[in-house]
Image 1 (cartoon, helix red, strand yellow):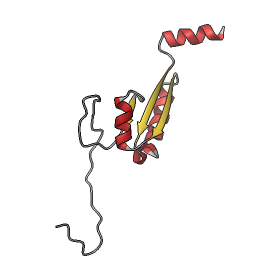
Image 2 (tube, one colour; image 1 turned 90 degrees about the vertical axis):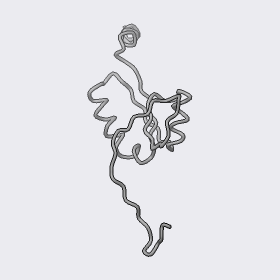
Image 3 (tube, helix red, strand yellow; image 1 turned 60 degrees about the vertical axis):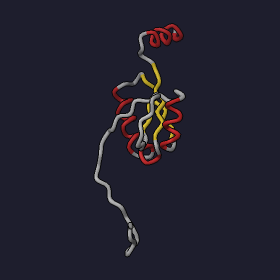
Image 4 (cartoon, helix red, strand yellow; image 1 turned 120 degrees about the horizontal axis):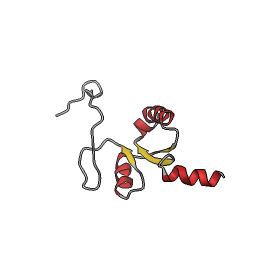
Length: 101
């Protein structure tokens, strides 16, 4: 019976879901690729990706609306665990003759 198999899979943690929130810069290109690779390796896990601003990602994580979030944040928050995934050199682009001082 199908329902018995589904219940057994849930009990054995073979079926689960993962809700992910990501800032637009990551949610548009990188995260779909990573999610595709992840779900290929873990076919029993359903993954849902939602694009949100970095501050909205934080807000949703604090209220437990999402399981995982990807954002550009410069401060820690007591309700979430923040880990840097990578760092890269950055450049600023300014109009010719613009004085930063």
